Image (cartoon, rainbow, N blue to C red; front, side):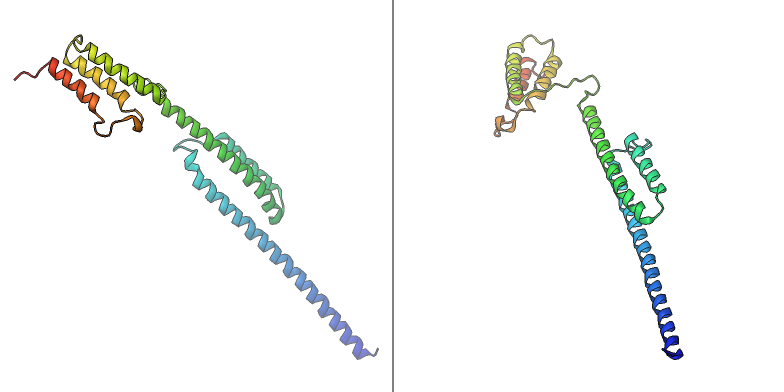
Length: 202
C-alpha cells in the first residue's frame, strides 16, 4: 500500500471511529434524556394522583395521615440515593405503588371514621337498628297503644308528642308496606282522635 492509500485509510478510520463515537455519544445523551423525561412524567402523574385523592382522606388544617407521610418520605429517600435518572425512575415506580397502597388505607380508615360519626346519635337522641319487620310490628303496636291510651294522656300536647313519636316509626316502614292511597292514614286517624278528645274551643 502506497502512501496515498495509507493516508486515505487512516482518514477513513478516523472518520469511522469518530462516527461510531458520535453515534454512541448521541445514544447516551438521548437515553439520558428519555430517562429524565420518563422520571419527570412519573412525578407529574404521582403528584396529580396525590392531589386528586387527598380530599378523600385529608381534612383542612390537618397534617397528612402518618402512613402517607411515611410512604412519601421513604420514596424521596430511596430516589435521592440513585445516581441515574433511569434508576430513579425504577425506584419511583416501587415508591408510587407503596404510596398508592398507603393512600388507599387512609381513605378506608377515614371512611370508617365518617361512618362511625354518622352512626352516633345527635343531641339527646339515640340510634336503634331495627329490621323492616321490627319497624312494622312496633309501629302497629304503638298505634294500637295510642288508641287505648287516648283517654289517659295529660293533655292535647302530650297526645301530640306521642303521635309524633309513632310517626317517627311509621315513616321508616318499607315502601311495599305503605298504602299508597293513604300513606298517612294512621297519623290522620290519631289526629282525629286528638281533636275528638280535645275539641277546639271557639
